[in-house]
Length: 399
Image (cartoon, rainbow, N blue to C red; front, top):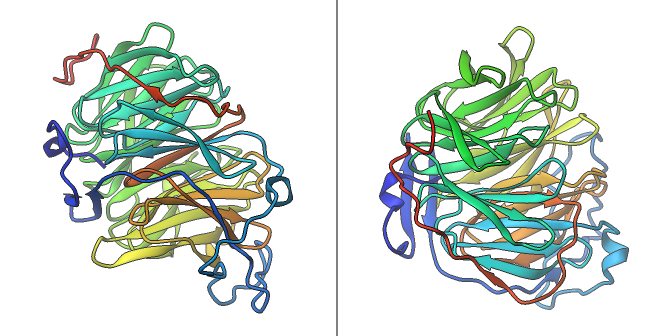
């Protein structure tokens, strides 16, 4: 996440940031774009998701990467977008080949990247400039840029595509942006250390994880006002909705747990212990499981993703992914999940049928946010954005 002290001309290497004693990330330098495909360990076959819990599922390590035909691994068409916060870039990974086919640079301090629900636009925040930028997902043309509050961390787009929302961590606010005009239409007070957020499937609300407190804030998208705060536990970092919108899950980075909230009653109905300092969380498309990335700290990095049974709130598998597992997303078929490893500067590809990592893709420095687009990006020249000057006082164009 981005703090106000990241607003400098260039992020120094290995500079630690800490909010509310819960999340630690590090600023670093640049990476390359190659792919290592990992063979499955035949001596310890992993069970499918939902099987009886067993030992930690790992990918077999080899000094020589095992290369394979892309279609034999995934058969998935689309693009995995990654925000490389320390490098000031976005990586576009071909989901069928696991190769970085495009790098978009010029966005300083991008903690998060998000593809719109229709897949036609890609959004990112600049923690350095206090701004949000929108790109055309097909052409990568810059549609527009606007101010947010200071230190924006996450950005999401409403299901109808009309409004984008950013969390402004140091201010404890959410900025609402009209996507057609790129004008700020509201600045909404929420909780301390506003970090992750996601809209409900029906678009009626946005839930915000306040990592500096113990609550989730609920925003009514019709009025653009906070209508409730739900107590969940220490330092919630991100939220994820069940596909039917009945429940929302929150990673509790301050207590190594996942919380479950009944959306109708806005009450906590369950928790389960996962790994150390869990950050992003994502529900599989069938609603049966919740994936939780356990980041840990720089001194003691977490290396796993927990797979939680959404109904029973029990951990059914733990998958080794890499140091500092942070961001997680699942592609629409539910077969593959993608995880950013903050301290390894790469993305792990998880086969959820086998519960093992089948590829690691080096990206830029300190990859954080991750999102999936159904649109493929052609392997062509990289893109350098010229970010227009925006006032970074958090006032935006409206109130």
